[in-house]
Image 1 (cartoon, rainbow, N blue to C red):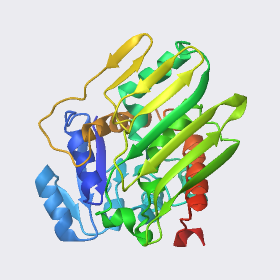
Image 2 (cartoon, helix red, strand yellow):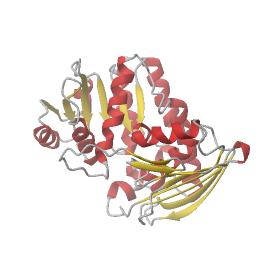
Image 3 (cartoon, one colour):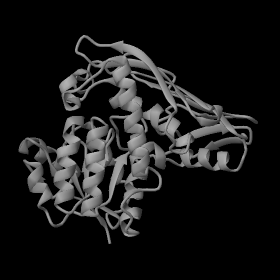
Image 4 (cartoon, helix red, strand yellow):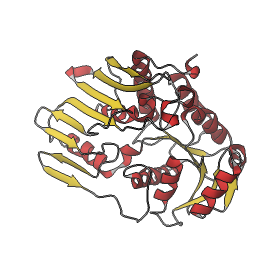
Length: 333
C-alpha cells in the first residue's frame, strides 16, 4: 500500500521533495494533496506535479482523511504551529529542518508527537544518504581508530533570498544551513551533548547571523570545528580524524555521493532522473522519504537515523551558537 503524502507549502524545498518522490512508483509513494496560503499557488503546484487536490489553507489539508503523512516545507516560524496542527489531526509529520525556532519550541513539538502517538521526523536528509551510512560503518569497523576530531563546513552565497536574511522569517546562517555541519558533528559524536561550545561570527544589518565559526568540546578529548556562511561559498566538505586515519566526506557534505578513507573510495551516485532541482543533489531527499515510509510501516514513532534526542541536541547547539553570535528571534521571548 502506498504511503499517502500531503505537501504543506508550495515553495522551492517542497518542489524538490515532491520531485524526489517521483523516483519511486506511485504504489510506494503517492502525493494526495498540496496546501498553500494562496489557493492559486497551490493549484499551480498541483498542476505541475499532477496532484489531485489543492487547498488554500493548511487546516483543509489537515482534515483530509486520504493523507497518512504530511511534509512541512513552510518558513521556519511556521514549523511549530503547522506541525502541531497536523499531529493533532492524527497525521504523521516530516518537518523541514530546523524542526523549530529554538529549544523551547522543539521540546513542545516533540511532546505533542509523543502524546498523539504520531511519527515525527526532522528532515535531516543527510542522515539517510548512502554515503553517511558508509561513514558510520567504517567508523564502527575501526578503520580510523578512535575518533578525535571532526571538521565540517557548509556555505553558499544566498544573501539574495529574503527567507535567509529576514529575522521575522527565521533567517540566519545557523538555522538555515549551519544545521548541516552541526548535525554532522552530532552524528559522528553519537548524539552526545558537547561539554562546551565556543562560537563567534558576523551579523547582517537585519539582525541575523550571516556566518559563524564554532568549536565544540566533547568528552574524551574529542573536538569538532565547524563553520557556516550565507555570504561565502565554502568548500562544504567534512572530515573525521581518527587515531589511525581520516575519512573525507566530499562536497556537498549535506548529501555527498562519495567519501574517501584509508580503505578506499566509496561512491554511490544519486539517480539521474532528468528532473531539475532547486538545491544541489536535491534528489537525495528520496532517502528520507523512504525512511519515513519504513518507520510508519514498522509502527515507529521516531527514526533511529535522527532520533528525537538528537533533534533536541542539535537544537541546543544551534541555540547556543546563534546567541553567542548575536541572533535572537521573537520566539525567544
